[in-house]
Image (cartoon, rainbow, N blue to C red; front, side):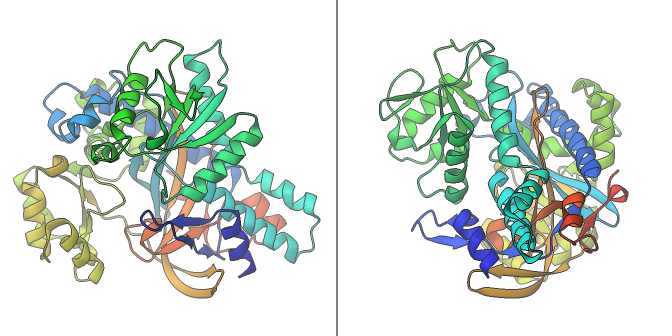
Length: 475
């Protein structure tokens, strides 16, 4: 409980958007361990996969496949897109380890959060075990440093992205654009303080604070660099300040903006994240013309072949019949949706969580066959994709919060941070989430699983942990 309280005090918590109430994120006492060499290989593959996703999305901007990628977006989302592929200071590839292999399930370019949460989970776990072994404070600090920092990598990514577009300038003030009472508010406050310590004045910016001037201004201050932690679809809600923010984003995301204007990272890049793009990456393994059209490099094609499971646009009648007849083998995902809200795992069709998702998305319980029909016919958000079921065996974890500990079986993912269009790449790591559901989301129950480098775990006498990712896990 002391570990959980220390983690919560440091910022491992979520905020209720309506009430502002703070809730601690449970922390697993069973870390995932990976060697530095294997983590570096993972990062290399994740980088190639994210780069391929950007290429695929923007290569298909005009053509027969536009319907499922670009027309899935709202008019506002399309209006805020850059005409050329974006530079992504931060991105995330969400993966499942399964039967001795790592599989990528989705790309995340909108709000690839949890850099802070991952750092806190690892740092507090290292500190707790270090104290258990009577280590000196400086030794614990060195082990925390050796484990790496996604916050530091995000910082380097933002500055590198800025430098590539403004090579003769240095940013003077950074704004973190977010909602008031954002669910990750504690994480954003941590970033604000960390970036200020790193040497750049940083503030949180909310839409109602912005001023109607050229570039991003708030409270009389100009922000020449903005880290966007704000969904574009929020701008379609009629709230004070959103119309101005819409205009400012449109200015900042246009090509050829003069140096006096603000640079925004990440710029809106929804086409990279829609599930149709992922399905087309999968199809490119067997479709040479599609791979050539996207100008995929050999390294990108290798990453796709090694990481991406069979995924297809859910639009062929023969495919509908196949999926209906074999629910254990497939997962249906809405093409453009957030937070796993419209993900249907055929294997769980008799579980309460499956029925709850049907009610939320379709308004009533549905059998698997009926659900497939509705998904196949749906045009909302560009329809659905179908993906082969990746088995992720739950493992036993002990979760701790400031109020106590509990034992449960969790499905644990392995998400890899990356960047696109930045050279050299920041020293990214990863984050592991544990969920009670096969659809992993930190807000849906479960907690954070610390990700420790094997070399650090050995110093903490944790070298024999069962939750381990090794070279055999990787393609």
